[in-house]
Image (tube, rainbow over all chains, first blue to last red; front, side, top):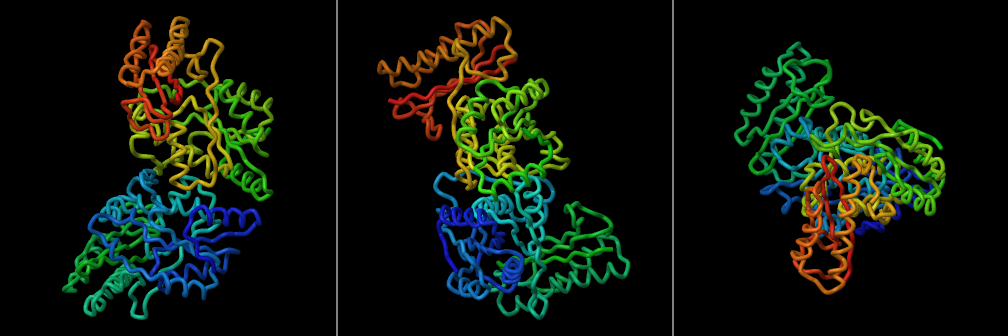
Length: 282
Length: 282
């Protein structure tokens, strides 16, 4: 497994592989890998001739006061895990390689799909995501790029970006991987203390309870949101950032459950902000 | 010569050519072709295995009240000219093919390089240019893209965009082509009436006179701009939009001529806005 820090080196390497007719799969990550990431890697390994994993904690997608500085990093462990998954190449650039002095080019998807939910709580976040992912696409020239359904809004924004900017590639969404007790895997779970870790189970419980309500016939999104909120507020340390029920195709606001809907949550436990989501179809 | 209107068709065609190891040259145009465009095409034909010319009057780069609706178009004549230049493929999409309903993704280069000059006179112009050119790059996957030095700021913005978003291609700048009397070729010259056409010669005359001043030792950009302005104001129909002398590498403002400088003008004659420029090195 090669580890490359230099853009022109990996770009040239990928160009050669493309010329040889190889199918390239890209798994963009911020490192500190867990089973969620590894499920993306395994799917890429199954579909593609070449698997590239990028590890880059992207400053452009963190706002002021967010956890960029303290975001967990462990390059050595990450590379050991990826080597076991038969990854061909790890791209792990320095910040100044990706954003040299005077950097000023950004890609942005406007509108509701990027403005609500995490876009509202984290201004500039999706602009940072779209910009770094555009760069990674141009650098690695993948045929398929893999993203986790855990970041549901992110993958929807990126699908729209790929479609609208005509990137010559396909995005594959990979299902959420959960701990045995239901907590969605996240690099940020490491921030939680014991009580927060216990309380954090409420996210998935509230989502499953909402799904159950819908199965039983509830169609009023306001009522479903209220009951989610009530459950979360039962946890002393939980602080709701948002609870949204939207059209799963375009994140349009909906008053009534119909077709495929995305139920998405963001909740803070102390300084740690966790997200989770569930797609329900009626 | 093929003429294609459909994005997925040309994208697949270009993908196949790349897999065959062909070098693709792209010449993005808004059509109504003149010798300036054809010089780009000839350079592409000389360097590349496959030459693709796009013809698309891009609404995203026109502001409200600009000449999008009346911009001259002549697809039949353009295709006849390109056929003679041995172009392989013309990509001529409809607006709704490039910007389907609900389109919301944009690429933008921020900062002085895109804010001053045409960026100041035409808000949103370079965002429209960067967006459509990003789309064309993703669709046609060129190894080299050709742009005219006539639109000096445009090519600088695009070079910065390619560098910063890591597009896997090279931009080639092609020199300005002029009419025998010195007027820079432009599709918009057709708007000029006889007197305006005569007065429009002042752009190049003023640039050459500024160059001559510099050759004779003048280094004060303020004085050079004043003398350009004076010349242009000698034309009854001319209305100066901007006169700028900037660092030719990054468009930084300069007080004193040093190294390579770009002298750039935009002047209106009635409703017609013409631009011209000259690079001078001391």
